[in-house]
Amino acid sequence: MGRVASSSGRPPGSARSVRVFAPASVSNLGPGFDIFGLALERPGDEVVVRAAPGSGIVSLTVTGDGGRVPTDPLRNAAALAVQGVLDRLGAGAGVAIEVHKGIPLASGLGGSAASAVAGAVAADALLDGALDRTALLECALIGESKGSGADHADNAAPSLAGGFVLVLQGRPPRMVQLPTPEEMVVAVAHPALEVETLGARTILGDTIPLGAGILQWGNAAGLVAAFFRKDWDLIARCVRDAVAEPARAGLVPGFHRVKAAALEAGAVAAGLSGSGPSVFALCRGQLAAEAAAAAMAEAFMLEAGVESDIVISGTNAAGARILEME
Ligand code: HSE
Image 1 (cartoon, rainbow, N blue to C red):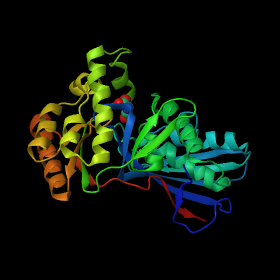
Image 2: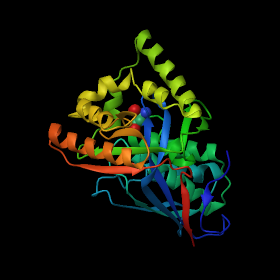
Image 3: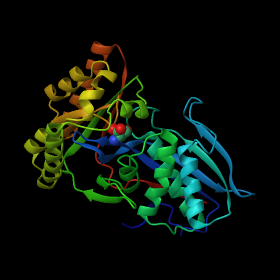
């Protein structure tokens, strides 16, 4: 896979400061626990990495997080990813980092992954733009896994590369970008609740029953085929999670009703976004997505008494992008 898109028109390596946007993502998409993710157009996090006197990470500030994201570089996803880039490039350069959170915390929309991706891409561009996407993903995963305490690449991969991505675990991980139907619009309801990914993974345990595995790998393979074939009946059939969603549903008050409301409003498929609490719905066109989003928000209010933020988005094909180089 190639390099990260720049809208600055400036060659990498000649800058003093780089600002990068990395988008939110919906991971798992039903059967693809830890292997499927889809980049959204918004929201997203922005990270600025600036050359600074000294060596290593000399300062780190975070905005948009209500003071909750760690500003210790050893516990911050973006800073850990930046350090991963510095280490890989053997760079003794000093850098100052600004993280601007646009993705709500513990929302199931890949916020720590987006910060880590934006940090890695910005640091790489500031230095010399030498790293390819696989190397950038590995640096982002240092940040994502240490920052969030959970080791999975299904948010970082789409946030970096864009589109719908199958990510195969291993060293190095392998990203496989797959098509989605052009008319597909994603509706997301993000309720005013939080679910910590680490805790939501702990409750899953280490093993699954064989029957659940058979359902899960059948649906995962079926969903890939369905996206290639633009087969909406098969999409509806395959966006089902036999492993994580049943165990996690209890973490999100009203989840079953919210999902049903999306389907009743015309969504083709729906489920928990990552570890939740956000719920996503795959829809044919904008109007169906607006109807599904409204139905989900109403159901969250009726069932759980919570307001929801709504996202309606096509697939973000570009992934992380450089916004400014100065
Ligand atoms: N695949 C991960 C999980 C995503 O479900 O735990 C977390 O956002």
